[in-house]
Image (cartoon, rainbow, N blue to C red):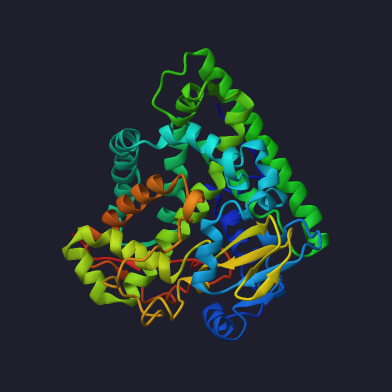
Length: 431
């Protein structure tokens, strides 16, 4: 099914990806980590939202309702909030991006409603399913499409040529759209337009939110039509949509509309988070050539390298929760209904937990890094993202003497939320 729109961005969503970066950049803030370090020491539980202060849309009050917000900077406070799903709920997330994703927005559910939906979805990510996707989709896509293209030359801009299109192509292959690359490009762009909806400026928000809702509805309608076709055909395939059709938990199955909402929920994160995670990882490796040399010699170190990269620069640098009742954090009273803006990027450089927190040290003791979430809301798609990252990094490490291209400026990780470099230019030697 091809449904191409000439207004789509092309290049597997590259302009939309760049627009998202600009929205979440943080005006006038070159180094958020220095700011967070000062606030950990002086105002670890700060009244107000640090994101709003720098003009960045915040999950704590996406809808600009005037909700009271506090910002948390210490690791101990943040992990306590994230592990207490009863006291700190996620329903406020449906005010912002969650409003685009319908009733199946997993992150916006708490308690029994969250557990029920997660149990319905979890079998779609079982180890045997992941292994099949790795063997039949991810590895062939890496080698035959992206690997083949890169090996024909000796230089590349990796964000646009690999890190953005690869996870997009992967998730659409998993959904069963691999045979229609034009539609993949179009709907990947729509998914990124959804992320570009929230804005701090009300005038801009009116325009971008309207575009985001339009994109969200187009995604839903397209997906529901595909679901209906596959259900009518027996839904006996290995793709995720067929598996969602067959999914059942305690006698509960999913309707076509619900599956449409679930798939629509998966698509923006499938590109956004994985793209920036891979980009940040490579930036850290080039900045630490000793670690790069160790990894080239021993690929089994990749999980440790990835974990440390996500600690040092988590893509989703902020989360949010809402107090279900009056409580306090660190002696600061938090009234029921107030929100906390959770600075993951600060928690992961907390000096009380991490020795030399600003160093890239893959041998530091293993501590939860929160990069894929924490507790009940651990990212459901994390295993797929890790397979993609493993495949892409092994492809790059096989390129002889891969290094930054001296003709271009070195990549810089930037932004307050959705942190990452805009470009990563590299060169390598002939085989």
